Length: 401
Image (cartoon, rainbow, N blue to C red; front, side):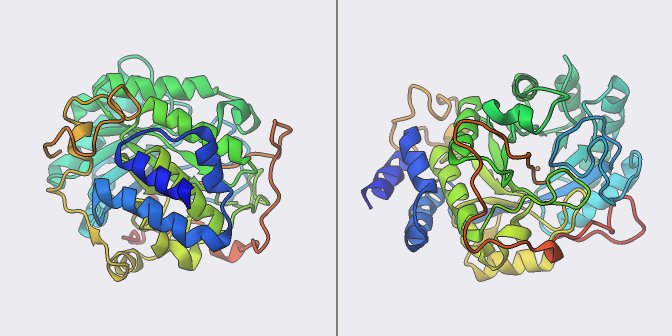
């Protein structure tokens, strides 16, 4: 296909595809799917080889959130029967982190429900970050605490945080359909505050909320413009007790096309396969490793993932390798002073700069321009694959890592 040849060439040059090209990837047929995966795989290998970075989630505080994000089991008014607990102590969180690191995780992501942290919360999380760093040498820590206020990013950075996650989730045009208690602009501002504080920005999306192809392209292009270092791609986990429990729009094939489109638009960033992969990709998860270079190990915030050992076996069996703590994740030009992806030097030859170096979402169907697509033919409701987390943080049971 001429389309795929063009996209590979652009990806190797870090050149932005056109919107029409990105939409065309999402519109490819199942007969063309392996060609799409192979093409995006060339771009992935150019910038990340066959390495897979493992990340491990710790839910520091579960449930009782005042925000109304429709996709979230911790939202205001949620009837999901999830674990609910207040802040973990620093030593408890560090113990959870050690389990993830022992399983091969290079980055630990500490998450807390809520609109955003108070100054007291920042102090508390700072102590937790310091404990994790002290007891797990070389581990990266990413904080995800909601909307940041002035100076909070700098305080987290001073405590040892390496990164900050805050997802855009969906397109600006449809954001109000999934959340009313804060705005899309609030989320963009938090990502920019994290970057200004010297934290590595992590920001991604959630697919499967009934959004159109145009919505998906819009949010991925917006992420490219924000230029985070990592882009997690979540697939909605339709949990009972949330407004989107009946939103089942995804097939394994559509998930792969979404990941391929994201890789073509963001060729040299850490694209992470995040929540919902077990539910929607199922037995096709290994194919996704040709598109992404990062996954979460084990469980998510309020739902269970597949066994940690199964994750490691999948990586090995697919011919990939776990990225070591002593290896830089990002290609050299992203930390060597080059223009950001999509900037004036986006068309420079690959490697010209040299040197070495985050639960689903959803919304109710809304009457936006392109409309919400129906569930694709062959998709099915698999509630048997959605399991509430009952181990790890907030319990007396060992974590899954």
